[in-house]
Length: 373
Image (cartoon, rainbow, N blue to C red; front, side):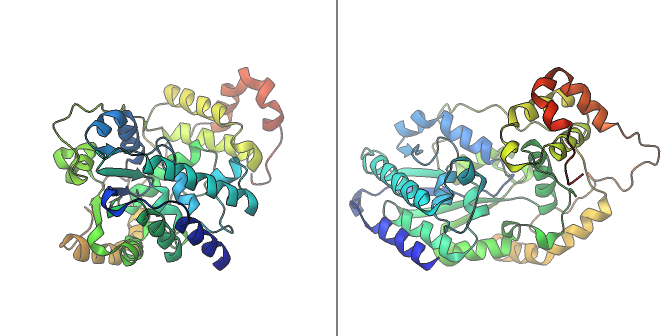
């Protein structure tokens, strides 16, 4: 890891240096996951030209919408990611060449900015979810310091139970097999402990550089996420921005469970992504035929889950927001019990009905049983 980090530091320090007086400021939006990041990134993409006319630049070389490659750039070689596997970047030599290419393209893009550009916005939830070790965050800081001055970090925090329930929907959609909608809190990824997360980022960038926000319509400016983001980032508010459509469609419990059946039957890593279009079609079709609310855990299970984060959340509330509680603690959206006579659909039968007209494509996969069933 030390050799790789030394290589990255040398790579950053090589090449031309942007003149200090010409460096723009930077808004670094780091997520977290399931806090409307897709909506924010689509907004920035749709209004790229309009923002540029107002002195604000949204880069393309590190991703058209989501700047995920920047997060991956900062990872050591021993860390893996689906993006790297899909793009054949698992070997050290491949990663080295890819890093050099990303750096060259980014340097060309930022060095070529017009003097009118005073602010750059970089956005990816993967910055908070993938960069776990302080050395990785420091690598990011070294990368950014070369081109930017006055780096401000914007991060949205969502109540942990709401986050994982929302992630269940995403996990189903992208092909993962999820045994429990509420995993054991200790097994969750690092970024859901907001005290630790903010502590790591503030230790590298400085507490004064970080602006945490609560992902809750009740706390947004005008109860609107994009208006909140615009205000926090000090973007012009008297501009006729194009507002993206809401693409975060909620799926019914039946659709989620049917697609879980599909995922169990097709759980080979190399097949997961090949079948994504078919998975999306089945998901959407079942959701239309069997509408309803998403799958939810029982209230007592959620309360037990939330207790794991309560103390650290309270500490974040006091330290960063000057109040006693970080989130509202209303859990009434979760059922106390499930009715004993609640009908349970035959999910496998529904799945087979959906794929009946696609048997020529799916037959070989659906006829074999997974070892995880």
